[in-house]
Amino acid sequence: MIRLLFGVSLLVLLTGCSGNQSALNTHGHSADALKDLIILVTAVCTAVFLMVVGFLLWALARKREVPRSDNDAERRMTLSVRIAIAFTALTVAGLTIASFYTTSDLNSGNDATVVVRVKAQQWWWQFNYRGVNQEPAFQTANELHIPVNQDVRLELESLDVIHSLWIPSLAGKLDMIPGRKNIITMRASRPGIYRGQCAEFCGLQHSHMAFVVVAEEEPAYQQWFAVQAAPAQEPTVAEAVVGKAVFMNKPCAACHTIRGTPATGTSGPDLTHVASRHTIGAGLLETTRGSLAAWIADPQTLKPGNNMPLVPLTSDELRQISAYMEELK
Image (cartoon, rainbow, N blue to C red; front, side, top):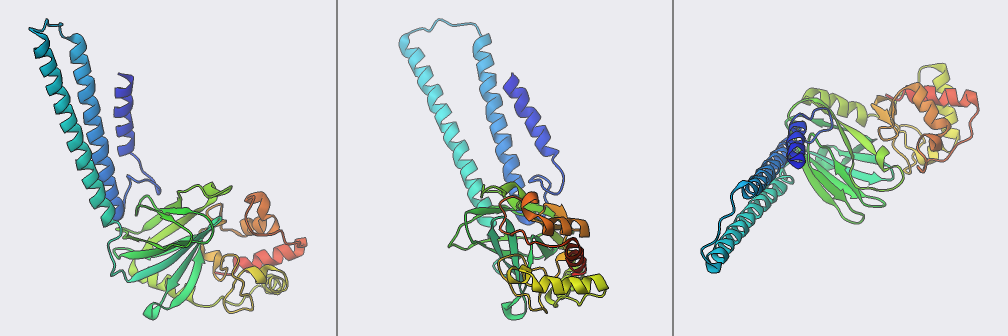
């Protein structure tokens, strides 16, 4: 009885899930298909459980009958077992077929107009966008923008260990294996901000490897695309102007790219428009001047094990670089 109540309660809780990271609060074609599969499997398993409990209660409550002969009892038991086996086989086969068709539908959309190359590494995400004639246009980090009601194809790669991309409200889950390219297609049905994450344990900061997906109408997406494709704007505030010079003279420029400047490093995220992103540190902190300064000052305290070294800076240099980062929008 306790298991029965638990199963019913779990079903009720699942159907009430909401928020920007829920496989049952869906706003995409692929996610809708997975949601239907989850509900189907849960409903079938619940029905089977109730049937088993019902037969068990009936067997305990009924009066024991004296069989007419041993042969009669054996035939009845044999028939019951055969029926149970046939029912189990049909149930498993049905769920397997439903799962197969749902999974095959996740990679549909080969005519997607938006193609993004996604590279995962410990512990952040790199999104490479393509422009005219599918030529590389620009890259962002930990923030993916897509137009609504359009198929978007993500080409998944891993640069170190096995990762797994999962955007519960928009698409399914797919592993990213070093040396192999996987593809997943998704389509957002309404504008919004959705959370994605790595769903395969990949090391110390696995739980801090998140990203956001911003789904927006086509005009807003095209405006964002044009801004991101442009080089970084020149700083206007005096403190930020000095901060740019400090950034270029420190090891920062050897690891990060800021398009339109001498900084062309590829080890770390592209910072050309870092201040326009919702978060830094792969979802760790909201993007503010304070969080930028805290990250620059001591990245290992905020996210132990990440690949950014501690760069010695004076307090004035830290303020100046954070002022420069704040203007990179």
